[in-house]
Length: 237
Image (cartoon, rainbow, N blue to C red; front, side, top):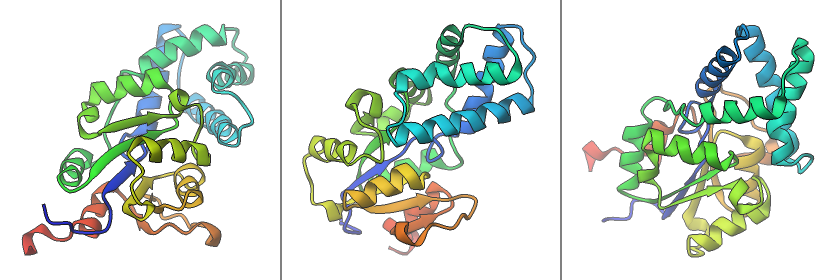
C-alpha cells in the first residue's frame, strides 16, 4: 500500500481517546451503589470523579501505588459521605462492573478501521489490567491492535520514559520519527511521548490551552479528525 505519511506506528490511549470513560464510570458507579442499596446521584458521581482524578495524578507522579489507589479512593469517598463500608470489597465489585462498560466515543469504530488499513496500531493505557482487558473484549476493539500495553502489566505508568521504552522495544524499535502517540492527557500521553522523543497528537474536545513547554505535534477535537491529517481525502486520491 502506498505510504501516505512518515508514520508507521500509531500508539493510541484508551480512555477518553477511543472509549467514553466518564460514561462507563458513571454507569458502573450507579450499578455498584445500587448493588449495595445506597442512593446514588450526580453529586456523589462528581465527588468521586474529583477524588479519583487526584489519585490518578498522584499515580502518574509515583506518589501512590495502583493497589492503594483502587481502594483508598473509595475510602476517601465514604469518609466524605459518612458511609460505613468495606472500601476493598466495594472496589472489587466496582471494578468487576466497570469491566463490562465499554461505550465508544463517536466515530471511533470507523476511524480505527481506516487507520488500521494504513498504519500498525498499538494501545497504551494506564488502566487496571483486568478492567481494560475486559472492556477491550466487550467492545471488540482488541481486534484493531497488534499490541496492548497496560501499565499494571509493564510495571511503569505513563508518562514514565520506562513505559515508552518498553513499548518501543516491544514493537521492534522502529525509528522514533515513524511513531505517533495519540491521547487526551497532556500529563501522561503527550508529556510521555515528548519525553521519549516521539511526535504526539492531543485529543482535546474542550479546546483547552496547552502550556508552551508541552505543545503537541497535532491537536484534534475527536479521533476522526486524525484521518484527513494522516491519510488525506480519500475521495480525491
